[in-house]
Image (tube, rainbow, N blue to C red; front, side):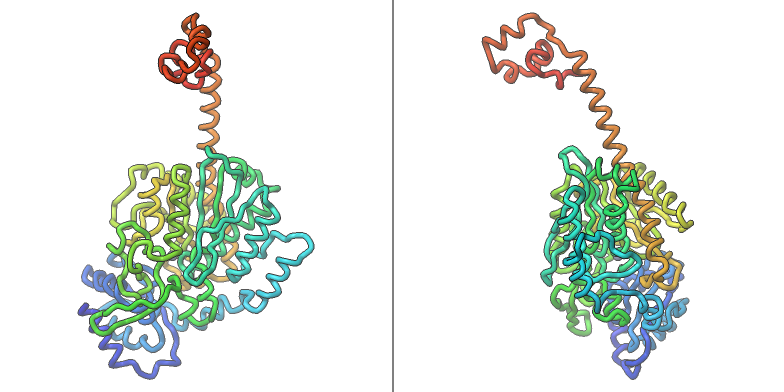
Length: 502
Ligand SMILES: [Zn+2]
């Protein structure tokens, strides 16, 4: 609270003439425990506009990137100096960087109408979406709809739910569903500004739809597992980030677009829109790494699953319980392959060995493509997100959060260079196939085991006593009513071969 008051006063005193300055990103290094705690408090209480943390502070001597709006940069610098922080300005002018890195990207803002018309009217359906670009949500969702309409043998459209602004949260379901098959779910875009994650999930869809004939591995997945991909979990937020793409205030939006909520922060009543949907899950809700202030970028919302997006998504995942073997959520950035749990350090799920083994293999496979170095482990940031909820509530074997390129130490953060978009998606797919292979192979070998068992049962199946046929004739329900005895004595006559022990 004291910190908030100090910061608010600093801001009030100095809110002067910086209107036309630049958004900056400060790289701050907390070097003492006290500084770390101060940073964590700031992270949990600061208004996004004043200090938008691109990373949660987690350890002493671990850098933290913080975006600061032009009218607050002087005060923020003074604040850091006053408290003896080691820091540097990592991005001097974020607006300029956005123009440089993303300004020439074809984002289809003006072409949307034409693009949609083409998707609708082309003679013959073009399932291929040109990758290496960012598309509006309406283009992406029309694309998904058209795939499902035109390729019903491999994909079905699914609607997870509806957003607060009324958009459908859409995804595709791949593979023929049978009740015994295992399910894998991949999502992206729960955080609006993480465009590289949305691009990567779209790339996966493109690859499956268009690459399956040349790639036996993809056909193998289509035959043996059920795979859901939901490329944009927070379409309202995503569309908002596209409204003014070189304006950091819009482009760096992270939350949903839920209506304004207010909270008194010790100085004033602050009201802001949006909830961090990944902090709205019912796992250690509001306990740590989240904020109760609506103006914070990590605002957790009024209660667990208060938001239509996270509520619908949790219901969707819960409906798959029992068959859901892997859940992968794509975020950016840091190059990390994260498994549970992240709410407290050194806290693991009971099956950690297996989770870790597959993560290590995935990271190795990912790195084989371009040498990109990923680390794996429990989250370095203390948070409570969707994968931890899924791990605990749904007992999913492989539940991973992947933080894509760039690496933690790179300056550009969320602004991934255009040239890196496709390589990022490609290498991530290579890592993800390790998980998909694992699920596919385990299912296949369980099928082989089952068919071998059934063969052995048929071979061994016989009646132990000679009177079986007579008993059945005089008492037609005897097989059902005295099942365990009849499995032992009259398995063949009673058709109970599948129950005998082998
Ligand atoms: Zn994220």
